[in-house]
Length: 193
Image (cartoon, rainbow, N blue to C red):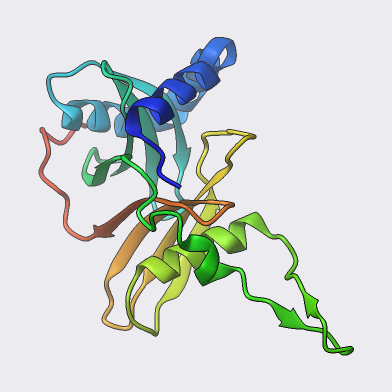
């Protein structure tokens, strides 16, 4: 299933609605440097923060929309360094996530038994399916802060055997919205702080 940036962004603008600005204001209190860094990284366009959450690794994940209703995911630290900045275009697995993450178990009587539905686990598996190779492990995960009841999302940090770290954002129905290697700061805009 493809999710267009315009329709996704417009839907999230509606989601922000009345309570969204209060949520963004609350997030600003704890993540003001990350919000500012992500807004600067966005450049000339108007960037409207939707929310920011602690990502557990000493940084924040910030969701923004621009003047064209595009949705952006940004990862920044408390020093104002940006490590990932990605516009959400569509499902990176192009609707095929379900075939990677929904195994069927065979019960004792030989019939297929669906696995328990754990939305965060499905998002983890979708992120791991997007990363080629074996030996990757999840080193951080949680709700991505968008609070969209209709399509909840989750962030997942994955570390490979080679020591590389990736940030992924995926949904409970195995869509991967963003996938970025986390390494040195990206050098977008100027560090804030």
